[in-house]
Length: 190
Image (cartoon, rainbow, N blue to C red):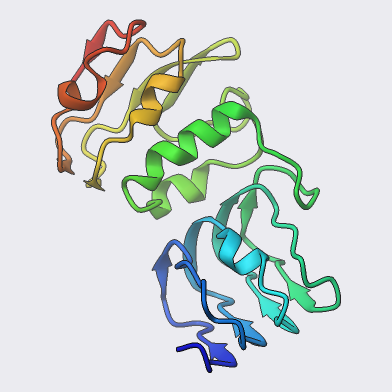
């Protein structure tokens, strides 16, 4: 579809991540407002210099607030999005990046996008679903019975203070021990 110039997909109950848009060099107008899109805005979209209008508002997008190469476009990102910081291009806390990398393997489920807000997963005033911390350290990930599908990310191992991972009662493609068996800090995996 390299000739595609407009994608008007607002209010269509779309969910999951925005797909990679490489090769759509003629794309000028994109409107995906009012869906349930989750995950990180792909680099293939932020790099598109052909864009003149982009509407991403009222979704559940996460990660860093995107910075776009096309500086003269009309941009709407208002609404429910859950970017870690308000500054375009500013990196998220490494723990946020690791957690987003973990849930990417599950397709960025809406349940996480609705509760994981801000740039501190250990902030006591904003509880992140499935995450328990001791101080600033993530110690427990409890995703038991969350109807998750997909793959277990090796990114769990980047959380060096993690003691417990509970992935039981989901529909995952691997067993936790196959992916996480060599993670040194863990004392319990289910």
